[in-house]
Length: 186
Image (cartoon, rainbow, N blue to C red; front, side, top):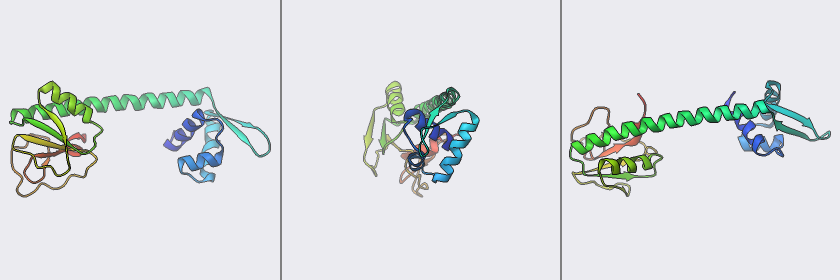
């Protein structure tokens, strides 16, 4: 099942009063494409179509459709948990290495989807954790983690300091670590 098919199915499961025009606007497809997807879902048995009158059709998600939504949600949940475990392990390894190298405080710049993991691990490892403003210049015993939502920049020519294997230090003095480069699976 394609993503747009699942999206339409989920919307119909939540609100059975939706019409084709509503669905096309919600999912960002043309009315013709939405119509084709609805027909395909009905042919696959995920959707039941009930003609209310000459102008109106009611769409009802079938038990097979509900099962498909549940199955997709479950697989998405499993992938998410697997990624969280991966991020936690990678971040814990990184934080321990940084502590061994003399980093005494971790700061987070920007909004991050994994900030709760970083904060938990800092507490577990015994590193103070706080947030900082963009462009904060850390001291020699601090490391700034820059949000994974920020684009990494090339390492400044003045950057220095040891780089643990697998890490990408960037910035003016090697005291910034971009989470986007750290969290990408290789």
